[in-house]
Image (cartoon, rainbow, N blue to C red; front, side, top):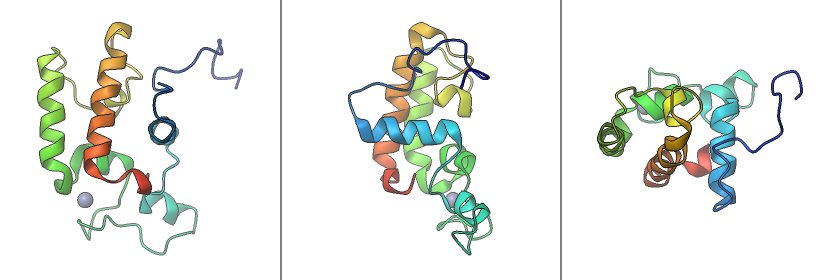
Length: 125
Ligand SMILES: [Zn+2]
């Protein structure tokens, strides 16, 4: 761990209000989810495609940014971020990791968590 971080302070996505959400956000940040593309890479799932998009691998990027199944929830999230003056809509922004001012990281992560809850996909992440 010391190779990657200089301090041991909690990461911005650790909120301690919901263990399940903290685990989900940590998995998304680390890239270790139960989405089929990752499970396929680990030889756990024979299929790598999104259940709603039969020709597209179910990656974190696809789930968060592209899958039409979650379009309405994503539109709400994007609108909320625009209200905060944030025009960038990418994975680092949604996970509050980079490109987000520290004073807004908590708000962005709360909005991302609302998206995750509304998607109903937490058990699969
Ligand atoms: Zn999809």
